[in-house]
Length: 223
Image (cartoon, rainbow, N blue to C red; front, side, top):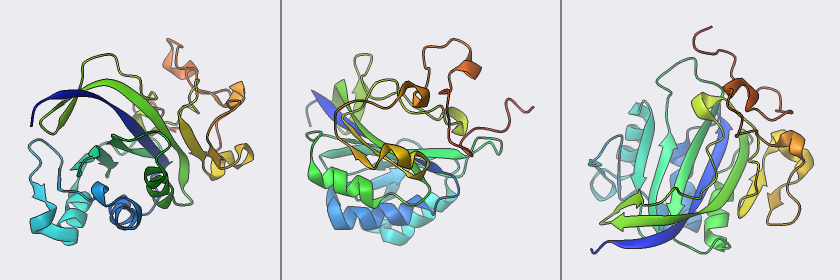
């Protein structure tokens, strides 16, 4: 397969670590809404050694349960890649985990949106879809050839910083942000008090002025 440049829709799910296991939800949502998201290959490192045609549901679920960091997933085009959070390697990580998917579709694609919503649970905090530009698809691997344009990561080490300073293509607000409504597809962005201050040099000051209870990290570097 020749290499080519492309843009993708980068979908992010943020949820509490107490959420039900994501792997069974992923299979269910894919079968209902986006079969291309079923994991052709999966694993914790390249090359991905898990094969869905050989290992099936049981193999995928077992791999997700064994994983200690992120479980990488390769789907069928237009789903190029995904990563599912597993048990954190550091017990003192904060309460938030995230999953991602890179899919080559129009931002308004209804199947992707239905899949994204099907993956949510009461513990889901925020779901977003943003366009990531200037990637190179080399065989089946996505490589950035520019700075990238997707939404910044909002929960480093499991510590929720707040909603992004600039809006994504679309997003969905979970229970911690129920006052903002559910699905957002355009219009005025959220009030500044909910936005992470990602330009701050001091990490302690990068949190939004108002962060819902229970989403902050209790420990900082072991203290």
